[in-house]
Length: 319
Ligand code: FES
Image (cartoon, rainbow, N blue to C red; front, side, top):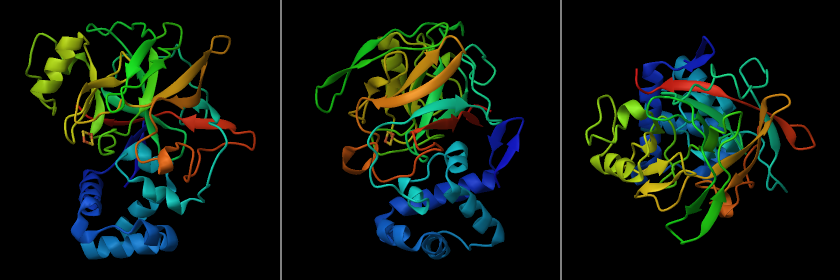
């Protein structure tokens, strides 16, 4: 079951294993998950599907699935839940523009850019917020060099290998221009945290081509990190896609042909608060009709399309 401990969201190992089984079944064509029926019948369809394809839906399992369907906690805990979960919350059909949301902590207090406790330099813990929809997880990272000294992330041109298009990544924000945010949905086939996550310098030493355990880094990913001269990478353990978090999450290794979209952050130097204002780059993976703003419920916001989104440390992939 989901629990909060010291501000971190913890999931039982059994729940993680169960969810992985469920996700793998959902992708299996022989037990095809019917999104339309799910949208129509909601949790009853999901309970039946789990009963038939994964495991008995006992009381604990029912509570766990119910927790997942609430949205934010699902993303925070396991991330790998398909976007269809969002159908259970009143879906919107379209939204005219990206909302501007204030980043807050689990108490609802604004996250301060200069406070390194929630977003440490080169954090091995996955820290997420949802944007623009409640089922869209994004990494927030405070970038550092190989010795974990906070470092500026300059603007960069990012190429989309699939199309050859180029867009501008605006660079890091905050007092040291070190804080960046990217979609945490892999642009290959949509894997989410913990499968896709940030590997800090300890695991990406450019002088080596074998990273210490535990990790699932490929030699290709390490070679790409070495060639790009970056001390840390975002890597998807599903099929090995690698992204450069110092250069707008540009593609370092496939199979992905698209960079991770950037969640644009704005820092208010007078308050030290951080805001997320829009997505830049390619549409978020799986967005209906290629539009990041269609069809899924939004994070909490008022009628002016402003509100908050919670920054949540989730799984420490390296412990
Ligand atoms: S889904 Fe990430 S590499 Fe395939």
